[in-house]
Length: 247
Image (cartoon, rainbow, N blue to C red; front, top):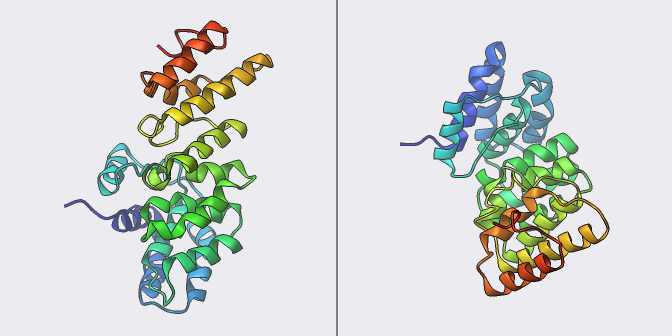
């Protein structure tokens, strides 16, 4: 039987905590006991100072464990303190709903805390209750916060409707963020997104500006749709794209 994400995070952190493992285990037991929410805030604040901010640096086998525990969960690039923050939030048994606790944490967090909170999205309970807070993250002017949701995170793939999905992809282009790390970029391709991206490419090239190659990944995925094919043929005729880009 596959381990849960909570079990994996605890195992990974304890294996790296060394002499600080006793502190971590004691803190987790206290959070699991369901004490005041202040305990959770204190743990989240202390985690970087006690455990450090080194990269979690998971092995290929550990990454496979993550995928087995939660398909699409890719904790590459996670830090030790970030993983501890997600774990603390997962194990905490408070009196309020998870969404209410998450909302307060998000509103009082600094950038590093916010990045950790959003990276944990695919692991949290009751995901439909988090849509407003996720929207706030997508509107962030801080690219790393936006990318904590958009990159290597299956939450958008699994829970966004096409409108929100398309808006996220387009914003990634506007903020200079790569599309390739978006989980489900091909699987969630849709004709409306393809039209938006073709129009975006048309405007960029008309202004003599470059178009990133990964823009064409979701376009190619739906190129056989009649409406998309018509748009592509028009763009080819106008010299906006080449046959190689959508082959």
